[in-house]
Length: 135
Ligand SMILES: [Zn+2]
Image 1: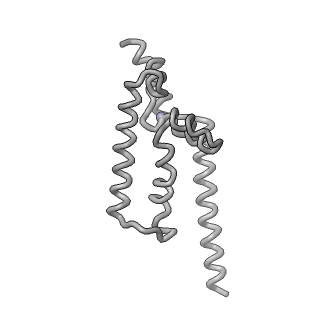
Image 2 (image 1 turned 60 degrees about the vertical axis):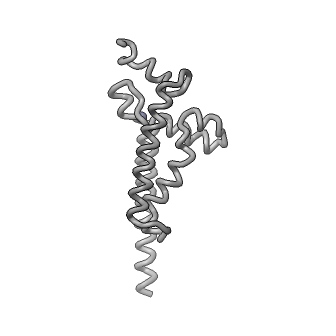
């Protein structure tokens, strides 16, 4: 009996945490956009990710690839990194560090590659930025 109440309280707490995180993420997406892009006029390595994820939700894989190729890898990796302990998923701390480092390196690599491909999302955004106008 007491165990059920504890389990229920824990479940409610987990649900509230996920609702708060989802609301914060939605607010960030719809109200502010990318703070780095807003401040500097330059896209950051993650710019285009939310548009890519919306494309994935609509099963528009070409659109997702255009806006951010890592949209195919980031959601499962982020879910694993955030929930691996709570869901008792395989992989220890060293694996988590390796996955996080690989994601960081991949973000920077994709950003650098897209910056030099004419017509790519990042290239277009950079050309329209205040820094590119002075170059
Ligand atoms: Zn950004």
